[in-house]
Length: 150
Image (cartoon, rainbow, N blue to C red; front, side, top):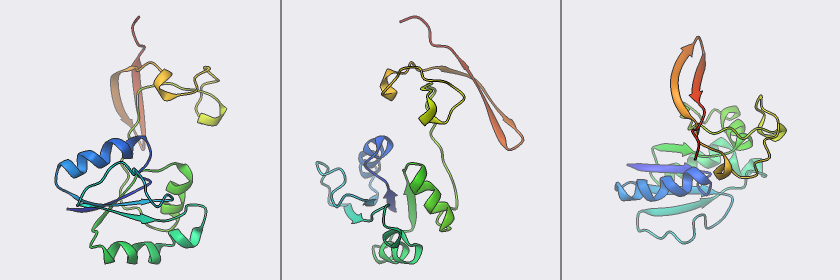
């Protein structure tokens, strides 16, 4: 399958790209960097540069034409909130898959109901254990058990 991964140099992208290549997919990496994941070289891997700060580089027709020229039929966006909002506003999104780690970071910048827990890196947060996941209308209720003593 030909797949495009947008915002590929983040935490998820660094794990996902090698896995997709291992499964035989042809990948196009789209990133603000001309060489996202430079250490990774593979014959099934191509790169396309687009700058999130420059809306013309992400305009839907230009991006889709560049991807179509590479024969890509699916696009996976792994991105932060600004790029995700731009993709939604431009009508580039048909499905959303969200990966939510069971870790609590807190702080004003995190836009969560938690105050500052003093963590500066996601790896400092203890993983919580999923007890129950339940749909509540259009929302999801995540019930998590606190991590045990280390």
